[in-house]
Image (tube, rainbow, N blue to C red; front, side, top):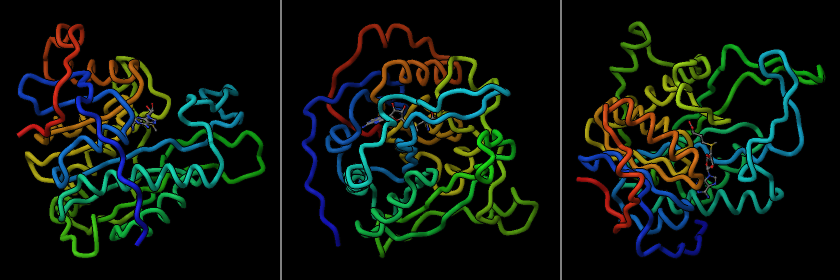
Length: 285
Ligand SMILES: C[S@@+](CC[C@H](N)C(=O)[O-])C[C@H]1O[C@@H](n2cnc3c(N)ncnc32)[C@H](O)[C@@H]1O
């Protein structure tokens, strides 16, 4: 099995926001260092939506207009080998914090998902499913030289070969009208209401995270997202009574996630953000 050098933990990772009951925590920082600061085997479920490495000067179509696909500096490709090294590093850091029966979902397009899948195999994850998320209303392909990109792949894996992963089979079957739920999920992009506090260029629909969290975790389980963005995983987790840890580099996206949570929880979170807390990395109990 492939071994990755352990990351250096932060003594005091920066808590950007924590709810009063400590069940919803947003850390600001690089996920490698923050993950290394968290206790081993303390997380039940991870959803990760890592950089796609597709911001390389291309264009796409949005609301009938040609726009750049530049999502941010974090999404610029460093080349095939470096991108793969990046995937190995964060996946390895995630694996350390997963409980023995924990599992991880990773979403991505063709730019990144093959590397992610290979890295998972190299690190000894147990591959469970490759889910095709059909986006239902994808933008047209402007060049007319390819099929319209209409799907995203979501890989699901257990921590290791012995993992007895959580799967709420009956709930998924009931949601699918009494028939086994398949690995093809037709879900629309985020609703307008999901973007009312601001936009993230790769925001995932709440319905997608709602399904993942319900399928593979129980109430009070700890759910973690190392690339938290606008906090979609956190919002789905909080709605479903799970605890949440989100890690994100960018202030603007952290603020967006805090606002979304504040709206959900009816919390006046202003004061907490103004006096940013520093504290030991703990998983809320
Ligand atoms: C694909 S987006 C995730 C979007 C998220 N799923 C949502 O629904 O909003 C990836 C996010 O990871 C953040 N990011 C990139 N590199 C990071 C790193 N090393 N550590 C923590 N966050 C990182 C980016 O700022 C970006 O917001």
